[in-house]
Image (tube, rainbow, N blue to C red):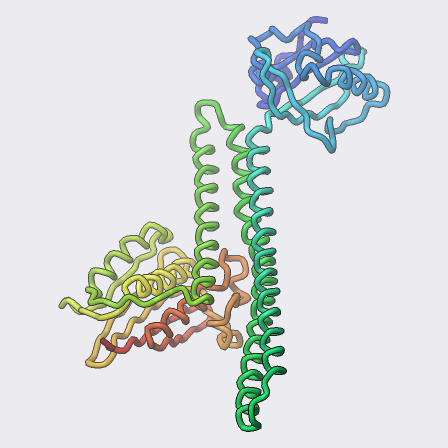
Length: 419
């Protein structure tokens, strides 16, 4: 059979990025577009007249012949190899994962099988990465479970020690009261740990899956934009992948910061720092994540302000508040940072023109995992402000806020001048 088509159909046939084969009942390829030749490493026109079994690994050619004949006996549009992995074989003998879709078409009054093929190598890589991430979450959940068991054992030991106390009545009452206090504290921590484990697994599963799915989708689409003139589309999906990776990094940083704070692994290292320089460094870094037209305005005395504090903790506080202000504000809005000092206090104020917090939900502002209803469609873990509050407490300061829905939010931090 000659490979002839009316010109419009041939143009469409050759323009498809998927490899398209037309196979007769004997398993011979009678038509094949340019994409199919490129996909399997053949020169243009070289596939015509070859057996389609040459395009599958030798180990499965017998099975492929049976499958092909079964399909011809009962044809219907479907995806080939459903429920199992398929591999294609290039002219040079190399193999690669492939996805095949089948259909039937009548050409010159004779039925032929149409096969549509795409290379899914990149998709397989992303699926493996997603699988590894889920396995890591399971391992982390198991580790949390071990900690719960350890806390329970500690509680049992406390109770056994209490039963062995044989001191006089006054000491016994004192020891019993201490043990009861420790028991209540242990039970409270136990409940918190169980809640943390449950919330972590639930939130991490969702928050990790969203950027990972974005990367999977973009990576699958990138492989389609290989030709000249598609650089802009390819760069768009590369930027999506970079953004998703940034979101994953922020989520992990939140969980790591909270874990260190909960376990008491964050210490203070106070020194004299120049507030003006610290603030300039932070705002310069944050400018990279500002939306179009967003401006960070600094309101601070021109004279150098020296303050005795932990520089790393102070930076974490400011970065978190500015990140929130940028994230929850629209483009073309101002974010203002005001620094004031008096003989006893350094006051830091961060003011935005963002979406604000509903009044009825403001009492939960600094609670762990809290997210306002109007922020559910914006990426976040609900841990940032809880972490900020803990850092401010470490510096023996106070944090307050005011907010109006759709008008903005202002956070104020008062830090005492304690040497």
